[in-house]
Amino acid sequence: MSLGFKLVSKSITLLTPSSLPTIPSSFPHFPRSLLSVANNFTSSGKKKLSSWVQRVGYKTETLLSDIMESGKEIQELNRNLYPDIEPYSTGFLKVSDVHTIYWEQSGNPSGRPVVFLHGGPGGGTSPSNRRFFDPEFYRIILFDQRGAGKSTPHACLEENTTWDLIDDIEKLREHLEIPEWQVFGGSWGSTLALAYSQSHPDKVTGLVLRGIFLLRKKEIDWFYEGGAAAIYPDAWEPFRDLIPESERESFVTAYHKRLNSDDLETQYAAARAWTKWEMMTAHLLPNEENIKKGDDDTFSLGRYDVCCPMMSAWDLHKAFPEADFKVVPDAGHSANEPGIAAELVAANEKLKTLAKKSEP
Image (tube, rainbow, N blue to C red):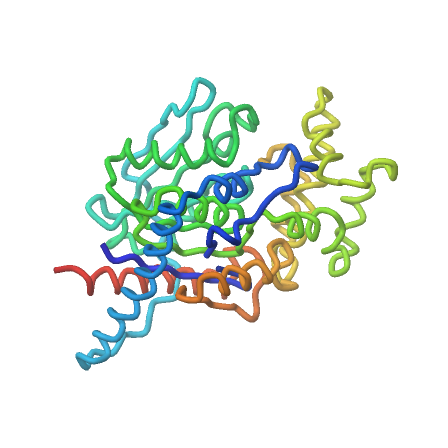
């Protein structure tokens, strides 16, 4: 098995056991997942991950050098999104007594499997997500995580932790009878992709990550506790002003309280403010159509990448220098910005080329 790793973004990188992010006990409602990984890693587990990381770098470099030495130039990689396509199969998979997740497959039924992990948490998938992949080469699997998109029950937080989601990825892989697959994730999806690939390294043929989020307290503080307000004071004030001054010691806790309120209008007001803050900071240049969605009553929970600042990508890059690290100079956080989308397509194209070269 040849395994490739690609990092794309205004931010991007790979986690080693010693650098796994943690969430302190003062944030009880955020998953302390990656801390658990660090605590539960055995010596043999670390050795396994280390050999996996080395294989990524070695194999990729070997393939590229073989191509160059044989006198074959690597053709210019496609950077254009592929045309819209429809799924060839869809379904629902019951993953617990509470949750059932929606899944779909598109592209080539006999192609190289790739699973798309959406952001959020709670963002859900959309038809445009299929366009990052060559449908003639890839077997494209999209699914909505627990409580998101078409999965049921909608917006349910019960039995909805990071590790539940990782288990769901494995259940879906087994359900679709896929031995191993490429993993693609952005923002929260990058967090999940890293945690999954560390938990199941033998099931991952490659990684493409965008907008790295490592679930560290400093990242949460930056975006939700006032750090990013230095760049977006106009967008921050409505988010801040919904919360009384007496509760502003922790906006995450204050919003969690309101989003789980028994009063529907309180939930809607908090959800609108939270969503609008995220949407007003997701693009390098403001996207008015996207921002207006923050005023809707139906939703799920750059100035460069303000949502997931480049420091996280850089930290991951330093921890895993073998990975291909791309910084897009004229983009923010959204995967739909032209520069980001182009590099994501190119990353999949590169792994496609490597996969073809490694075939017997």
